[in-house]
Length: 311
Ligand code: NAD
Image 1 (cartoon, rainbow, N blue to C red):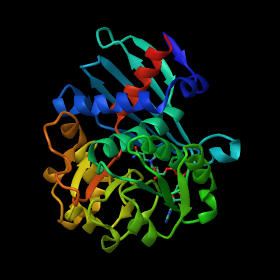
Image 2: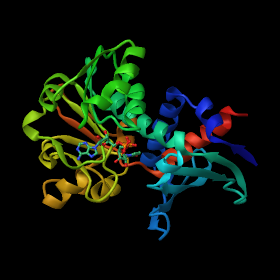
Image 3: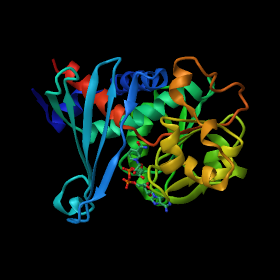
Image 4: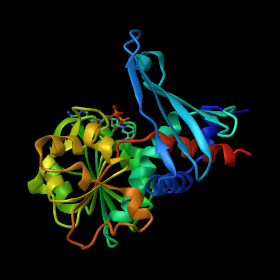
């Protein structure tokens, strides 16, 4: 059995590999070859921790496994990351474990990859300005993966505390992109693609701010009650997600579904666009929204790729 620690996983997986793995598993889900199993998430009654499992099986790549882990809010005091996870892969023929892969860096990479896949398949071809809302741990990962999907020239970003944007500015510089800290109004006026990656519980972007042609990748909302954009944006947009039912329950779509302005049947799995079963964006004036809530199969797909690359 292989054991791949955090440092090794970090060294092995790049954005291109994560992109290919996530795009393929979204396609597998759309074709009905790959299935996520019900998520378990529980408060363990110790250290204020939330712990759970995300699992699934992709028959097209014979990837069976589980990501176990969760959120330990006091880890920062111990010098550790609050989010902790480990992926265990199994032989689908026998059930025997084949690999244990540290999942912290992989989670960040697969989340950034999902956003990048949405940009590749849904953003306007001539997108030049990338907008980032948020500057936490995940934001730089999103920026790196998103930047590779179009010939972007500049990055405009907003964060609740503007002084936290320095890290994103450094990444933009490294990627050869101009960077500007802007207001939310300016961001929506200028950005062709907007990535939201916050843990906010109220709409940060209003429907009046969103221009025709914008692609929004909403990546922060992964729990009931969280919200990043005005739910009315979804009613007038083409809406895509990794997993529509999950999006309607814990994603950005929950608010529009609860308000009765969006039906779960109208949320299109991004995989259907990837396999060309759905046209995706149909005009340069369409507003497209990708609601990425994160599914276990993404974790298994990148973990499998790490195992392959480590061979
Ligand atoms: P983080 O704690 O490092 O950063 C949080 C960010 O949210 C910061 O930029 C902060 O300023 C912003 N924020 C929080 N409350 C806000 C408010 N009220 N108004 C404006 N901004 C606010 O978190 P992170 O690791 O960067 O993750 C960001 C979000 O993405 C989290 O909600 C996390 O759960 C989610 N996430 C989603 C996936 C997925 O697959 N969709 C995967 C990983 C993380």
